[in-house]
Length: 292
Ligand code: ADP
Image (cartoon, rainbow, N blue to C red):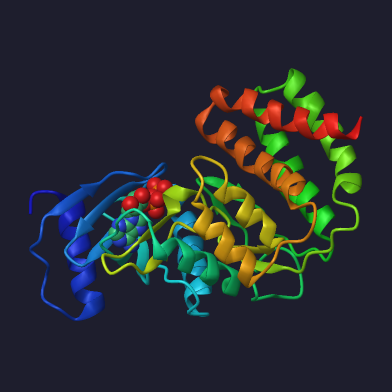
């Protein structure tokens, strides 16, 4: 093995699993947005710069948080740490295919079951990452406060620091003031969320079992997860029907979906740049125009 990353990972896995060193090749895997991903035998590995190790520590915690309830399958993490100078996360390799048919319905039911798991406050026991953006999760008993301070206002501030000012920030300020009115009367409980559930983070095994991966868990309004499934591609009707039958959404959900998705679009603006600015502005415009 000429590649130091390949040998370091193979050695690490051998030590952790008590098996002989894997001789399989280190195969690059596409499809991710943030990290370099590889398959090494029965293992799936994500790598990034060493200063991003915390991102993998909290992804490990999030995978464990989802897996402890055994409602929906997520990969089992094995280890995170530095290997050959890279921050790495090793987890089980699951052969994945696009989600379709009955598995979409099952995922709707399983997500509804996951969302039944509650804790006493909004947030999580630690901050984590959404993509590579820090996601604050300080405990708050009030959802509207939490969403304003730790989600929208926070992303708007990051955007301002990156030079996205002008109309985006003006709309942002108006939206922040309007949010107590838009969300008035909505009293969700703090439900366990995947936190980054777009269609690229769900798939199925060859025998049709749904799998979710790349989570950014926290406890929040379950509608925030459903909202995100509608961004960037969306899921099928079977998914939404099954979810709704298992755990009906409250009235007025579509307006809140727009609110919640602004958070993700702003995060995309902060991660991937200018092209998301107009989308964020259009979403804010559409909400504010309803209040006029
Ligand atoms: P990123 O953090 O860079 O967004 P992802 O976690 O989304 O990376 O993973 C990249 C791709 O690798 C996914 O689109 C998926 O197809 C595949 N993948 C993710 N987790 C696994 C796994 N445990 N086993 C096999 N393939 C996986």
